Image (cartoon, rainbow, N blue to C red):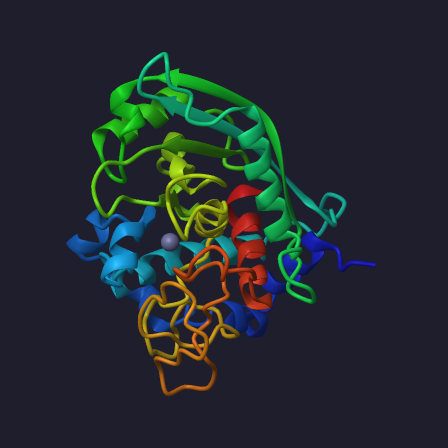
Length: 325
Ligand SMILES: [Zn+2]
């Protein structure tokens, strides 16, 4: 029988030792320092997975959208405060679910009436891929998370500007404000086509942003990343998995580079830089462990990424409890 999810989360949230294992550093002395102007204005609400497939294939280079240390500290401070508040909740709690069911609302953007970038069957397929990944069914004996996704609704909007929206643009904000539905527990999943080469594959908001920017919450993916799309190497639907990982509180495995705190998860080896393609044996840091090229939170090709770690699972559970549950 599976361990009751919510009880486990509460146990983690209540134990500074366990939390330190999962969220190494969030109890550090940094929580006492004042916010700098940079922290107040930093784009801590979103993270980008920018690896354009053309650039990846041709040069192995892409823009580095790793968060700054200041941004990470700010996010960790907010999460730590929320979890600390949970410790003060009354003991009586709802029945512990073994599965966390996440309703999905898919928003498909189209440039004109003659173009339907993805149909219902494609949306269902994408949600199936999410479920396979989060249930640990892309690899035998890998981490099984409690998250299960159900396509609750979908809509199609013809708007050329929104269709071409990219991370941080006014078009993105306008699109989300118009289309967003539900609360922080609802995964609003936008299918867009950002311009440029390299083009953005997808982006997501972190859970910490839901309280301040509720209608901007969600995940956007380049529609070319779905199975059969044009994003060669990245067209098996795992960009959505990666972005939902962010939406559930995960950083990139290369966040922080070769540092002790790294991605704030202790069982993902340190990694200096994103790994593209599928370079087995890559080892960019001297710390133990090869680069986690098979982890969904690296930048590997879809055929290469297939697992979350136990620590990431715990972190997603805590983030859900703090912000979305
Ligand atoms: Zn990312």
